[in-house]
Image 1 (cartoon, rainbow, N blue to C red):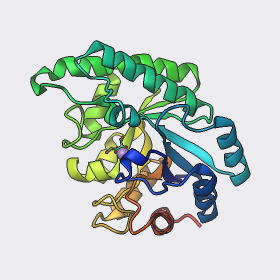
Image 2 (cartoon, rainbow, N blue to C red):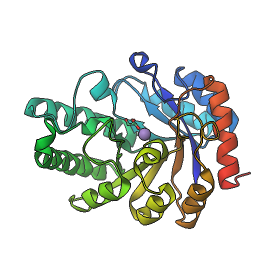
Image 3 (spheres, rainbow, N blue to C red):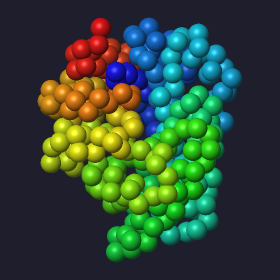
Length: 273
Ligand code: LER
Ligand code: MN
């Protein structure tokens, strides 16, 4: 059974970004739990930005899980990527993500590598950048495996990376890695831009998909853009996807209404009571 998830961002510097809740976990987690979300995905400034003990207690009291933790602050706040031409920057990126993996593993949650994959600079040196990305994911995949969690790799649209933009290309790349615990994130917003068929890509790459960003065409909550979710929801049911549908969406028109709309759309799409 697919599971519902709301997003919480705790980084004021990225306040314009696509996350539902912006309040501290002691406020946002009870709100998400009250609406019936199974989990929350966290975007924090670093691995020690949140008190893990308190967070565990909050999760227990509210009967909610941590679905995943984002690592994008490493890029947004510190300019780190796994494909920087500067070896020192790549090493710092691996160290930053490594700490995020340990933070997430405390909750059984995988870390997400999205914007931390970076870009081949200049584009002509893409094979080298792909090799660096593979090196980073091999090391980090092993770290995650040692702690009993997956590591999530996210293809992004062409305006955010020139690494891998489609699920199929991402899956082929993951096949070249040493570990099988590095899984794909299917972000419906990026897929709406890049895939020939969103439902088709889900069906073809189902074996690699470990997480889903549940967003409409304009990155507003599902139901507030023009994506037709019928085929996509059917594909997810047919491939028996049992991971999270995590609402990485703008808090439109405001966080509470975005959360309510997401839960309504989730129930409609997946016929969950
Ligand atoms: C960025 O566009 C995105 O989708 C995030 O999940 C990655 O950091
Ligand atoms: Mn995403």
